[in-house]
Image 1 (tube, rainbow, N blue to C red):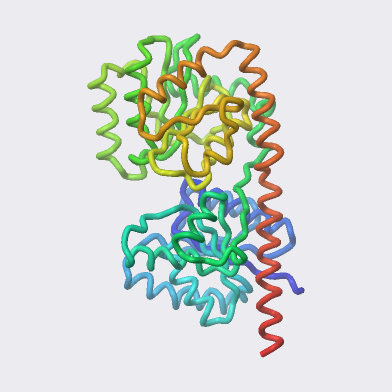
Image 2: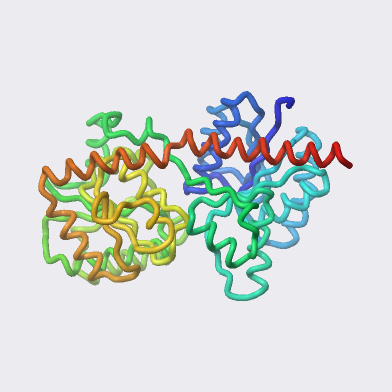
Length: 385
């Protein structure tokens, strides 16, 4: 097989699991000696693509405007022709519609990664979402997502490939974080000495459960805890302001920090005594829980979605009912009160668990194997035609 050119398509390259996964795979494509293209509306991760040797193509793919989606079909057709693209991999619904039609027009294999459950309350929404199940194959990030695809979109199981997301175990490793990086965050976040830190990473959007954690803090009745909400509001200023009002209204202004996006998450995890993922809707995978375990930190996550596959309950963390501040407060108490010996045992098991099941290299190898499979199938079809 000649050196293939792979085009990944997604809305933008800001922070998030979808974006991080695209960058990881872009790097793996380059390391395999293939040509790696990523089309998006741009963002902060474009610089990382450049560093990895991948090429970014700026297109207005971050819109649901039907006229722009239609125009993006022709834009992507031109990219496929100009760059001699061999396979298109779509990671989000609106750009996937443009990418699917463009790939079909040019006779190129089309692969998707199904990153979430999406809202599927009526036939129109299911039709819109259904483009993410048109990949041949379609990649599911968890068993939870695979079941959802089969049940909701009637996709035959043989068309699915289960590839859990992986993390960079060189980056997310406790012994790689130097003290000065943690001290910088202590200064930036104004953390008092000797304080217990509860960290909730995630963009500021309601379903990530920041309000649930704030309510849980009111049940703890302790003053030796600071809660850090680390994540960009991505323009959701009203929700950001709502969180600030809730913090003030609950008398927690000295115990909650809303710090914005964090560029050094390994150091942030090392500062944390407990990491929380309080999502009220199911996570397709739940990268936060895996990253935190890789750093040896106790994790509390909600008992649905991908978290059930990434956390070993009562061993590497706790699973609590979604949207239940009292249950979260109880788990927080258990986590904060861990003895030094128990914390060390948890860390050892959690790190080993992640290294065994959620290695970025394994994810990349499995994804490139899907590309090879799709390319070989299309080649065979063209030879038989």
